[in-house]
Length: 489
Length: 54
Ligand SMILES: Cc1cc2nc3c(=O)[nH]c(=O)nc-3n(C[C@H](O)[C@H](O)[C@H](O)COP(=O)(O)OP(=O)(O)OC[C@H]3O[C@@H](n4cnc5c(N)ncnc54)[C@H](O)[C@@H]3O)c2cc1C
Image (cartoon, rainbow over all chains, first blue to last red; front, top):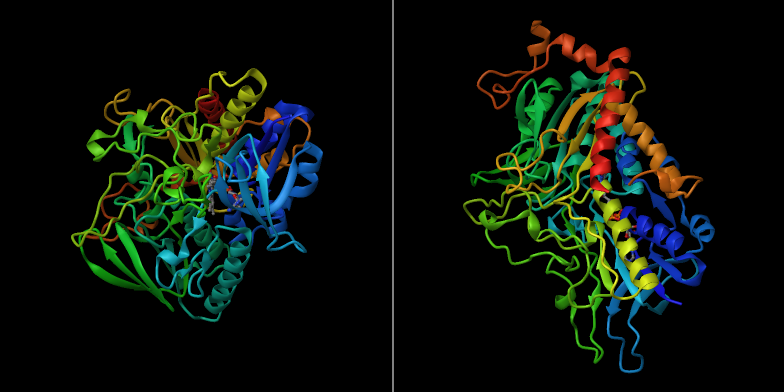
């Protein structure tokens, strides 16, 4: 009997674990180690953050789902990996620390034959003074990265709406809280959902809304922007993004590294070296992401964390990490099997794998502060990677160690993405986009880097309907309800 | 184009150079019949991209 341990029960890890359990059956064991008792459909946190959904609408208890799937569930966080075992034990193991009520702090070693690291991001609020402390959100801004954060954001938003109703003008500042952030899409959704809600509440005229981000142009989204076919042109996402911001009366600051946050004021440095401040009454700033800080030890107990993990804490996989300057970047730098090159029974997928480099052009201010988005690993690619990695491991277990691995490179896969711009069954809108491939391939598609026949976007009610249907569809799939395998990632 | 549609464009500002939709284009965005057709079209496009990616 082989044991597969999956670290992290988020989008990528949950996909990997549930497919592996289905494919391996009861003759092998799948263990999931994840610190939360509930699964969260993170994209809908945006709607929790404006009070349009509750925390219960976007989460569900994991234990019954894993019991149904025959998965061993440990409500715990992984702390360290011993890929060679230790002096008393030759089997590789992972050390976990329970977070489950009644067992909190208890430590256990779990041996494994294969392991998947799908621990997602550490929300690194502590990287910006005033934004927070470590992975804890600070007191001046709000966040929508977790369902709890989003509930808190919604409460603050309601207070601002109340103030506006009482005649007090409010300033909203939304975007990224550091020069090296990713996930601009989430901030984009949140700012337009706020704008929509303020309209609905009849207080839009009392609000100034501003975007602040590390993108060098609006519509970069950490993927270097994209070109979409429109009116016979290949049009840059910059044009569409600027158009939407203008239409909805949202001002913007771009190329910004938020260097400090204080009560009601953000300090920033721009790509051209300008130092400035921006006041706010309400601010949601996405934190930079890092790996969750897993350590790793060799058999003799020596620290080999830097062998397995990149300096940012994400796990090294089959990527080309020495590509150098952006002129040398190739689509083939991106990993496709997500196998660790040193320990071949270790894989990483979703946000947890170390990307070879950014997708957006690297830039810095005259003083040398790097200001450019880091690459996003959104839901669909994270799910596809999780499934591909599970497939590879099942083949290795069931067909033998020579079985070929599955490939799922972000330079070879597309993504469908729906960015909400306001909720409402007849009044809502969302930008529905597809992009192919996610990572531009300038050898295959010289010029735009992508196939413009499969890269498109449009905003409207249809996008909102799709976003709403996806919310229900993905929760249905994650709960492993009948036919769940038919719903694509 | 109605003056209302241009209300957020500020002369000499960073948003002066962008394109801006007219009222017809904006109406289409929430026109249920048109959006129902777009719903089908977008779904087909997404299914093709999803199919190419798996
Ligand atoms: C507000 C918001 C909106 C978004 N909207 C969209 C969208 O509309 N479309 C889209 O495609 N993407 C969206 N994304 C991105 C999407 O959520 C991510 O791409 C996706 O969640 C990544 O999956 P993952 O499994 O890598 O990480 P996660 O889903 O974050 O899962 C990581 C899991 O690992 C667990 N974990 C953490 N530390 C440990 C540890 N030490 N040991 C074990 N487990 C651990 C975490 O608790 C979590 O359960 C959004 C993100 C945010 C923040």
